[in-house]
Amino acid sequence: MEKSPMTDKFDITLNGIRLQCESGETILDVAKRDGTYIPTLCHDPRLDPAGACRSCLVEIDGQRRLQPACAFKVTPDLNIHSESARVRKHRKILMSLYMADHGAPLETEHNGDQLTRMARDCGPLLALNPVEAPRAARPAEDNPYFTFDPSLCILCARCTRYCDEVEAVNAITLSERGASTTIATAGQRTLMDTSCELCGGCVDTCPTGALMEKKPAKLNQVNPRKVRTTCNYCGVGCQMDLNVVDDKVIKVSSPEPGTTLNDGNLCVKGRFAYDFIHHQDRLTSPMIRGTDGQLHEATWAEAIETAARGLLDVKERHGADSLGFISSSRCTGEENYMMQKLARAAFGTNNCHQCAAT
Ligand code: SF4
Ligand code: SF4
Ligand code: FES
Image (cartoon, rainbow, N blue to C red; front, side, top):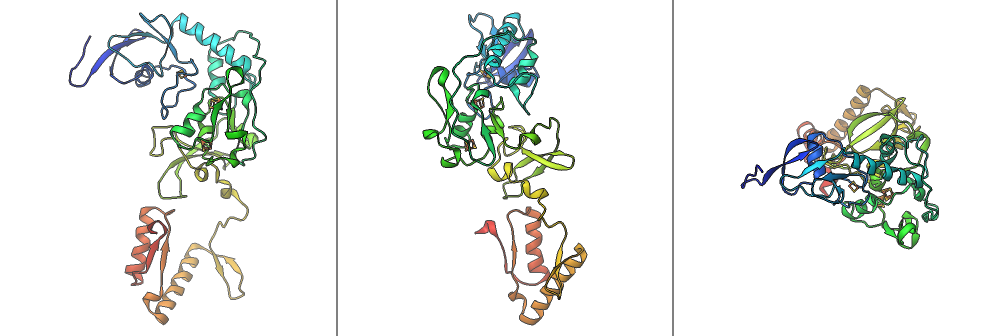
């Protein structure tokens, strides 16, 4: 054992390779750092480990049972096997059980459906009979953004744990017992009738497609081009990926947890309010109201000159303090700085304000 008393670092062996780790880490943490793939379903790095789905089980010398890599904490000198014959056999049986109940055939991969991809990796599955106790569905879900199909749910509880541990909303929960267990709201109300904030984080973390964004025809586009951008609905600066097909934004997704400041999370506006981008009523060029009282398209140079002329005219007639400049928290810090500079240095007034200051 190579152990440092100061840092509490020690070695373990994973698939015959000696790896250094720290106390408190799980086997999955160490494997990920090493680039070793261990399949997971109920794991989400933002959530406490649940050990619910059993897809990450590994073999550890001296342990009678296979252990969940997502929840098992490393200790010095563990000898772990993530691809042994016993582990592979377990995965095949587990995936066969899941897919026997899963409503979608293996051939039709849902967009981002982790379970179906994982089942495919196991090769031909065993032909098992489904459990004849379908989970209860909520009455028609009338929220505008996503659906819930209980027949696709594997009860990994990522959605309920996300809603509790990240959003602190608790709009959904596991209810009933045994084969009747399902994801429910209080009194099986539609989400619109609960404390749900429609953040969509539960949909994003769901590994099976049981929680699914509406507009399925668009979402079945398998490989949209992803364009990273900064959300401009508020000043936090969340990063988002615009999913683009044929120059059209068909979906907004959050970057992987742990990679950007919003840690894979978005609010309802950031995730779902993107229809305006291609809306027919959207202004795509500056407009100037003419002497006929109607708005007419103009170039940016014409628009800026017209605005400057109007502001200077007011200043000349009524003084600089008759002008006021209002900026927005949807602008960047640099843009807000420029706005107050424009007010103070160009027009000579301190009348400038920004909505985040109220
Ligand atoms: S949308 Fe957000 S608030 Fe609503 S149930 Fe899902 S995680 Fe909870
Ligand atoms: S709805 Fe999805 S995330 Fe929630 S328990 Fe079912 S499979 Fe897991
Ligand atoms: S990912 Fe480890 S038990 Fe589900």
